[in-house]
Image (cartoon, rainbow, N blue to C red):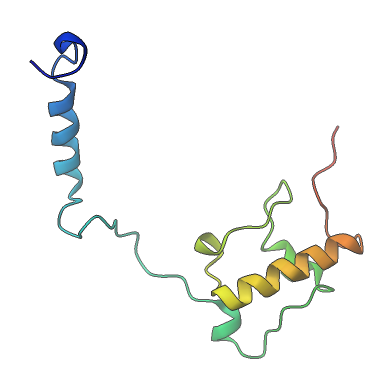
Length: 104
């Protein structure tokens, strides 16, 4: 009966297995398809440079709380994500960018 603690699962394991099958996760080998892969904006446009003095450009890579957005969300390549992180940290030290949002 079910397994674990005297069979109290009540068939929940079977429901979980059925939900996994409904999602179609087995077809892609465990990967979920979320559409197109994001392209690094700095690699796509060679004229763009990472500049810590450009506040409007650096704000794009910060959350509303002031945290650096990870590359899987921003779409940056590893090289440019490192440059963006360094630029944001430089901007924070010069008070161009916030460390955190102000408390009210």
